[in-house]
Amino acid sequence: MHSIFVFVLIVITGFICAGFLNSIYQLVTNRVMSFDVSKEHGISMLLSILTLIFAGPFVIMRNSIRGFIIEKRHGGWVAASTAISIFWSFISGLFLMNIYLTALA
Image (cartoon, rainbow, N blue to C red):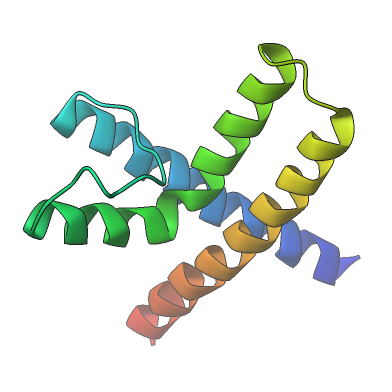
C-alpha cells in the first residue's frame, strides 16, 4: 500500500507542476500552450520546448478531454491519453521530487 501512495504522490506532483507551468505560460504569452512550436522562432521556441517538457501532461489531458466533448472522440482515446499523461507526470514528478530531496540532504 505504501508504494501505491508514493506513486500517486509523484504523479500528482508532476501533474500539478504541468498545470502550474501551463497557467504561467498562458499568463505571460496570452496564448494556449500546444505542441505546435513551429510558429515560434529563436529563444521563444527554446523556452516553449523547455516548458512543454514539464507541461506536456496537462496539454495532453486538455486536448483529449476537449476531443471527447467537442469532437465526440471515442473513450478509448481518452483512456490512452490518460495513461500517457500519467506516465509523463510520473517521470517529471520523479525528477522534481529527486531535486527536492537532494536539496534537503
